[in-house]
Image (cartoon, rainbow over all chains, first blue to last red; front, side, top):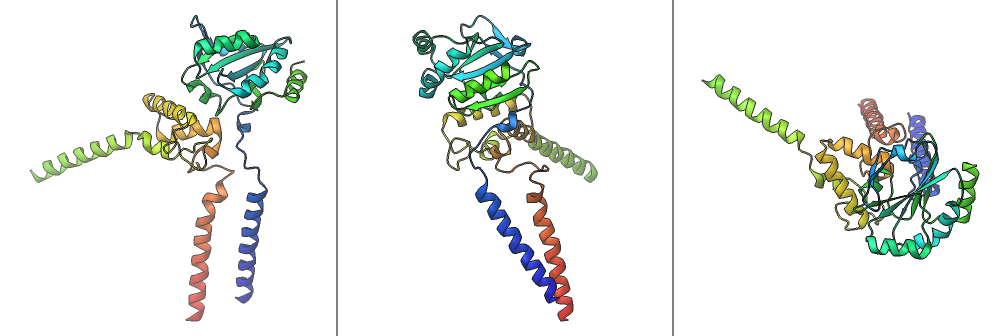
Length: 170
Length: 119
């Protein structure tokens, strides 16, 4: 009996220590990696100039980068040159989604820094962003020809991200 | 007469409980969803931009006729299990759900055998 008690106590002790170890060494930063390799959700989003709606059909048969941005977002200004460079590349459609922004400010932003977007839409109240697991901007999602999410970039795009995207699409 | 009255009461209460089951309380859902951009706050407690958006989406999902569990499933699908304070049972967190029951069974067995031996 004494032996069984000792074994049980040592097992509980080891278990508690291993739980502490796993919890303390785990990356606690939230990430949306669970979305990768999942199919792009159904969406119907109004274009920036209210003329039409964009759906999944508009991004079929090509690599697409969906970029959530706003004129009030400082990191969006930082990543804008990268988006301008990406707009020069073939095989990539950039769908810009203007997030919770005011139209005049958004237009000024694009006229000042350039418009890298092939398709431009707006998400006035942010509801569409939830479908893509967005929790802050800028965020970008790279989608392949089969409409599968292959990469998700949280925060401004960097030079490394640019190289990574180029490598994937070429 | 008594039978009719009982039947009437049964129908009334069963309808009442059925209606209560179908009502989805948005506040309850907000309390069980974590605000991902806040420090330890729920969507209900937070006034952040993210929380406001999630509240709008929850309202839309309720209007679409989604149940409470379906809404949690939708949110977990988009943001991972981290967004739900009480995660749904799955293979990754199965140990978390099963372990207390295993501990209870083993503990009970242990106490029972210990007491039996003392007697």
